[in-house]
Length: 172
Image (cartoon, rainbow, N blue to C red; front, side, top):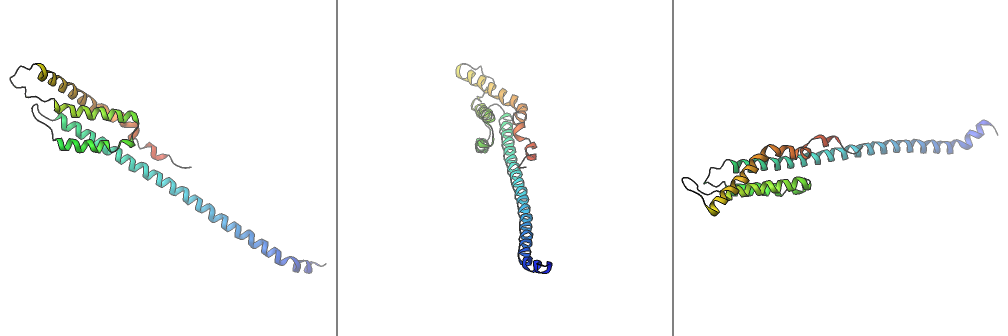
């Protein structure tokens, strides 16, 4: 068998094998590119979800601050805008699933203190308070003290859950 005969006999199978290897290489290249694209899309989607979650958490912080400000800026004998208070409360309560149990408990207590404050607002000008009125004023003072004291703690309590550092994580 001569070299020419050998080449004739195996030219077809060699060409088929070479074509199969080239096709497999091209398919492998595209598969790797698609996998890379899928990982990038997953990372982008996760970052967008986290950013959207951050915006909703920030809205809760803003609503909580507004509620506190609404309650604190009321003069004795006056009532704050109760419909606005309920609107802010709904904003805070609809985002419960965005926070840990610890933060949810803190927000519940703070919202309750805000709602307790205007409930204990008797007209006190020129009167000596006794019994229930005196107790009401004491309770209002306690609730107001809690609301005012928590205004500086609120950002610290929510700091970890409002941090943008989590945006750096994602699928590897």
